[in-house]
Image (cartoon, rainbow, N blue to C red):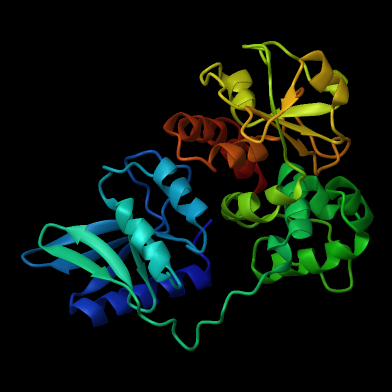
Length: 353
């Protein structure tokens, strides 16, 4: 897929802002270039900034940097020493996020002129520029509230639901029927899905750029939906109790580190994350778990309908395991998250677009 008009406009406005702040000429060399280093998706553009006596190139990626989790995701999936370096392009970046980017050595630039870019002969750090008047304040959209996130999750996990009845989508996402219409409309408006034909059924509807929708969902999930899932903490009394344990009899699913371990046998779990429809009292009793706010076992409500949303055995859908792993700064977890993305999520998304 090529860049949307909105993303191209954002990049062009940012390049103009760089020119205003620095007097340097910045230009787009190529849209969605194929680079020689591995990332989950192509950057939106290859840009060049004239820095005397030469020009420096950057891989520009458009992101809304409104949550710190997005920064960790970017650091996890874009090699720090890659050439050309990553430049995150955003409509607007607050001073707090700008400072976090600088601490992480993550280059950015926005349409207001805020920027952090380093290269031979160039060290640019500008913050505190006010948001442009024509840049609308991002509202709390229908697809980024708790109910909307449930719907988007179900659609991403089972794309054929895009052409199902609203009642079927509501059943899969476990939300009220009235939630579906506004969510689908916003997905159309924001060009995440093709619009439904006028006066007809939505047959043939499909995702336009599912990779972007996944990244948006993953960025919002930890702070909006996850805290609503009745998180309970316990401490298991027996070491290694998760090994080989099948959660299907308990109507529960492994997430996070245990899911990654089951998929790749690569990550030794330090925390056990379990999603269950109801509190699995039998499991808690059998493994002598004790309530502990700092415990190494977390149990959350399963927010999807497993009869409609496909899973792998007793594991949560890959997108959810990926989301949980990227909420930490633990290098092992981020590496495991990238493996899940590359092996399970990206190939599935490629077939959807």
